[in-house]
Image (cartoon, rainbow, N blue to C red):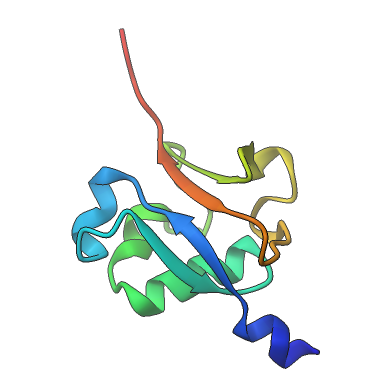
Length: 98
């Protein structure tokens, strides 16, 4: 069963500022059963993306939000949030205004 989980791919929406790292793709697929695994797989596919998403302690940067089906993972289980094949993950940069 764990092999099946490892082979599932989850669609991940990539924001415009990160598309230079994904070959200008706005939607990519990543493998994993949690957000943390998905984000690690993105790093293996698109080197350099982790530096844009994580701070030095391994936490998501304050100006980066990750959503599963429209829900912010910070209000779920953060990087331990489970994902399944029906889920969609979105990476969203914070927008500042004033």
